[in-house]
Image (cartoon, rainbow, N blue to C red):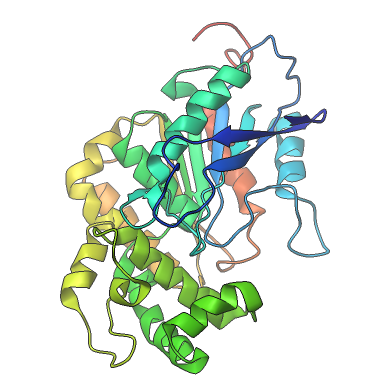
Length: 337
């Protein structure tokens, strides 16, 4: 374990990820940011923050020379009271294809199970409030999707913070398929494209194509599925494969509400936010999800902010500020559960 006054790193050996189909590491480093006032005696709530596709599992780095890190921004917000003090835990859900969607997948591995392991490991290692009402899970993009799915399918978390999540797949994913096919063809085929993971160039078209490939692998049911077979379009002919697309749609949060709205209704807090000019159409997916949540009677806070999909780390503070109403200052840091 590596420890500083504010950040702790520990390695978790995952039972769920051992012998995963992709041969990805089953021992993962977990980043934990300690809140102001943490002394190892008083218990604190925990926020689990899930990075988006292809993102490094850390809140310590800066994408640009300007501004501060997300970790510093949130710690400052906790210090001045805008966000309630809590541990922030960043799990590592990356795969050989870039991301896991934080779900259990036959071709990729058991990442929902891994996430549950991390919750248990954090409760063992740190002085936490070990109950769902004192846990929040959030993230952006694929991380926001993972947070939504966790809120729908497990009972570990009492609050969900979904920033620009994958939803309404006809808006967020389907329009990216032609661009993906173009990138695969320009690379010289699927194998040549996948080889660029090691050799580069890792440019924007490559990342878009890899995100679609990763989604296909996450949503596939057969562990023998190849990246080419996981796509809703044949990468050589462009012929649409409706049976594959229908399988993708079973993982769309908008469509999952028919079965899982009850779980979201039981949450203490659900935040859904998106940029009004999202480059990947996430704003239309979020609007569809917002409408579906209303139709199912799921209480939630919905907001659209100026901006797109990238460079929006500043909105995390406002998104997490809603937890103040769930974790009051009167109870945070006391011994009551």
